[in-house]
Length: 263
Length: 187
Image (cartoon, each protein chain N blue to C red):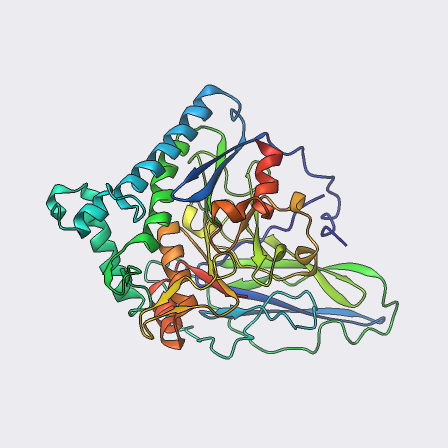
């Protein structure tokens, strides 16, 4: 059986709305933007997608640890002070601190540099935050629902006048990768709005840092978090994956808008 | 064909539908448990297709921790009684597929009613019929959803999935991913 039975007395759903997609490499990742609804084929939609990619590239130019000329790397080399950087840098410091407190230390912005040092590295929260910011131009497209997928962490949104339920709603069926077999879908969640972040090691090997043990975590499996923003869905997915029972308690107490599942 | 539409409850009400079926009568019991859950979908489960319940030993019950901004005045339903195994009491035609409308359950946000589909004695789909917030224009509520581990998701073709979430993919690994197939189909 591949589909649930239709409700009694109802016919098949109306044809799916139009869909259009772009994929670009940003922040070292494949980032796709999908639009569904009316008006996705016009120039306005393309301009909005371009604006969204532009915001992602701007965030990358500020925060990339792979670019010597990013604000972050210049700050790290003490070539500039925080006040001389983009105001987003100061905000990232604040967000990092907030994340560390709320996750009780499971999420941290003090990460290994690869040279044996620990340094300020907000990379773990910048991606989700960048996607949330990039959604702003897409929210202006009337009749359009969008999904920004940045390397497996995604945000779904739509114009405020678009229904969130009923026959006019545009729903996205999100498949969560099986961490043991990335060609398989292990779980699904259907959203009209919201973020889905998955933390795990399947794609990159051991790359998640556990500040308690001081080591890179490489155990199998993954954690997926859904909720209103990708910033916090991503922070919590990371924290819950590397963390402990204390982290789960912190999640229960401090993230009441968010849901998690572990595979 | 309709998709499964799963709506979330803002205090993480997890609907677990237990259905016992026999030839003389059918009865449904809807169990709504309000808890902050770290739900674990076990890979070695008996693949009953039911929505994931509190199967994790580390789940925390925080039914006392309700969002302060709740404006609902309905009573909370926290019944946790079960009425037996899902559909294992079948004595009739075990290969029949039936759908049953569960009783409407009063939750803190209003009535929620779920319809389940049973095939071969197993719950294969759960569809929410009544949601208490259709009048609300609250995007936050609609952004919460309960991840469901179900049989059809396991066999899902990429065409049935709109987008894929997984551990971060580098550009090099992307070309092999399911998401890239979905992207290619829509560019």
